[in-house]
Length: 246
Image (tube, rainbow, N blue to C red; front, side, top):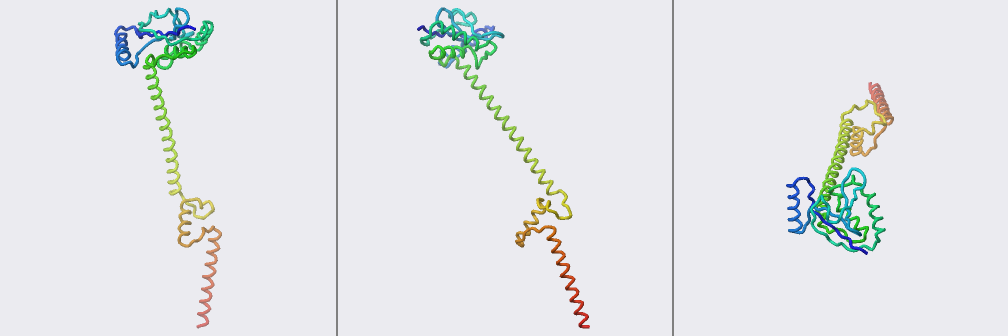
């Protein structure tokens, strides 16, 4: 068994003394003053005198080591003993080799995959508690804000798509109704006319007033022929009556 030690630095590698001083002030207020968090770099020491961390590089692994508490890029702050690992030095070296393959330097992201996320992963594999929440709280808060903003933008895009689709459907429906209402109606009735709004309105009116079903064109013709025959018969009877009287 051996101790697993977390080394914490203030991030002062901006290249600007003014920016570095601002970060130091932020960390002093938010960490030392109210205990919320700050902008920190972290590294893990396990077996030996080196610490292990993760950073950006264009090619190869982003996992690197340096003498504990001696990283020249940052300002050293403090260390915390996270616990003890039961793994042998051989097993620890195996874990470090695996992480070196899984964490290429090009995958570094300030909010979602930084040095503190790497140390969390290493501690989890070593079987010790992860980093205190305040170490990476600013990055986690920023990552959460980015996720919320992304989800909100996605919901707006989906709502816009649905609105456009609904508008297109409504437009096609209105065009269809206008075409059916104002379009030409054939002079001769046919079965195809039964689906037209004019025929349906007429049928509905007849159904209410007489209770009759809509008749076909052949039925209408037979009715007209019967009416003509009855009229002719009445004319003949009238003529005969006139002759008889005379």
